[in-house]
Image (cartoon, rainbow, N blue to C red; front, side, top):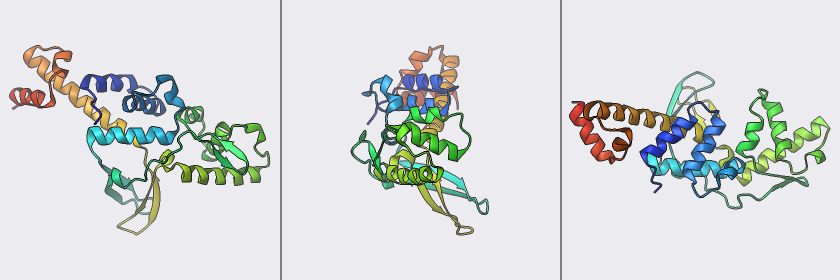
Length: 236
């Protein structure tokens, strides 16, 4: 089990509070995979990154992930619990290029997504990502129809080779029976949990520092059980 000390969590939270979600995901990856060289994290395949973040989530917060989504057909809010054990296995072959119609593609990474951060049109973003991932982008077809066909084939090949790159959930609305597929962004989900946990830690520090005059490092050094016991005495 990953042992993440409270001071480390607060440090990551402080660094990521005003950053772009892609940068936050890389920060979380550094927390989840301390054995990875920091300068290589942005180039790690998204599947490897997401799998590491899910392992961190399971170790620190458990494998049951409460979630909700609004039905796009009727607006009904659908609440459910995702079990991490039900997700597809992490595939082997992490950095192996994906070959489609003779073209070799690198697996999408955080750096590839960062290059698309200013692109608002989904179609343009998908084509740009295809070119960024191609080992030889000059060899890609210029014809729009041929490029669209290659894009569809590449998306299917990447999904088959590494479903963790873009986790998707099939959901049926209990109110209207409409079936839809939604993406599950483990990086955003985990960040929201870390943000909530960090703010509770700061509340604990404030309460105990006010009551006992202890410093933040002294309070964070306490075990969860001892910190809770002291809090119970100052917050009846």
